[in-house]
Length: 340
Image 1 (cartoon, rainbow, N blue to C red):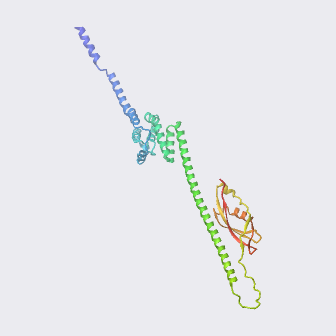
Image 2 (image 1 turned 90 degrees about the vertical axis):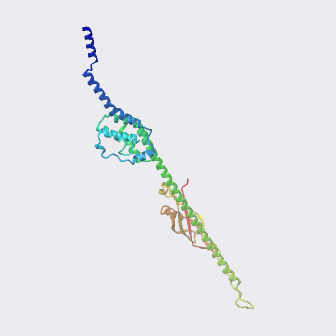
Image 3 (image 1 turned 135 degrees about the horizontal axis):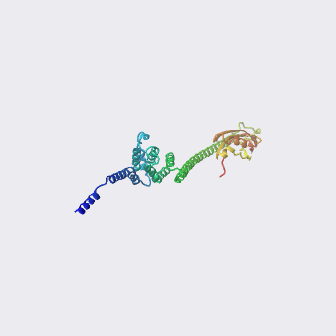
């Protein structure tokens, strides 16, 4: 009888809940619940929202969203909530002031060493770098520089930053080169048009000069023919000798016998400039050149002095009328082209 009573007493003690054990269990459960909501769940939410990088349409849509008012006044929990929202909406590093990286970095400013923010920045760095690379490829250089600087604040020693900076520099140089090529092509086209117009003008002037000389010769020939065919004014048995009818004036043009090549200006050569100069000159009866003046030039005042100096030293076989030397005024064009 005593033995049964002792056994039942032992069973009763063995099945009773110890208050200390119960308290420990409650504390462990509370800690587990707090860890779930504060660490594990935010981290899983952040990881679940990752992708290789936002598309252009996603970044454009995100850029339209306004950042929360007074970010500095938000608590750590509020900042983590904003960061999770930004992660889910693919706002990793953009737009400025309303992206996951900036929210997580604000958390670390308020609470250095926060494991959620630190882990999220580390795990999402590569995705933020991919998003920044897309910005570089879109040639939004100012935004790309801001995103690189933001990534550098999160992980300044990461080698990916060197690659991103190199790509940004290469894209900038490529754009500068393309713009320079387009500008050079435009200048070349304008110069070709100017040269074509100048050549057409010179041809028109030469044609007009030829027509003028032909008209002068034709007029002289008609005058001579009229004088030759005129009847005698008075008959006579022994008519007095009559002077011979004058022949048409025989005119020969001045012929260049010594040409001096103009000196190419050093400044124009360094600037890779080309052009032309129209000059007017007088060839005297002795074949020397004088009164050299610039009529037109392109570009203005670049090649004028070289053209005048060269033409002033030219020598001609003088023009003649009926074998007699005469002074004439001529117009000539000097081309200044770089040898290519």
